[in-house]
Length: 234
Image 1 (cartoon, rainbow, N blue to C red):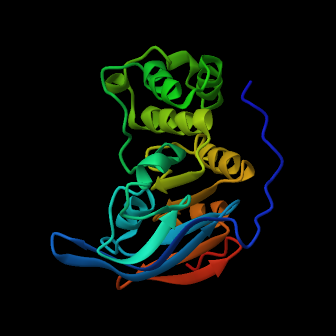
Image 2 (image 1 turned 180 degrees about the horizontal axis):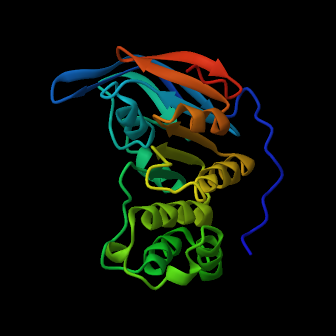
């Protein structure tokens, strides 16, 4: 079985997983984000919405410490953005991108065991995570021989196995059938109960409604609060 969930963490005002103040990002000299202010606290799931090209995925890359801002200040897990300190916290961040990121010539199990060794996670935890997402029977199948939905479930299993402090999801329900979509809720619940936080981007506002605590919309490069308690405007 997977490791039992720890008691739900009760966030305190100082429990900031990430904070952005006036963050600006240019992509190929084109302004994408301008003056973004955002705080993400332990134990919460924040939803990001916005038009195509508004900068949602760019903001996830900033939170993953993979993209240094052109302006503003911020920190993620105590590391100041754009500094060498970010390298030390990246192992505690999981980014599940729009397209599954697996080594194509490795099996699903090999992909997860490779990451598990880096995190000091036991092989039994990996096996349990694959079982939890319904992939124990396909663990020996090469990733490039799997459907998009199977690869997505394998990425969610990887999150279950390592339980990051910050989980970033870009269209997490993409490729999942109706019977598998509850796995996203399972994974985000595991992270928040361990005292971590999640930020999720989705075009499916009905799914986001059930997943998040509050919603932020990216408009004209700025972050604008929309709703609290999972109330996502239509």
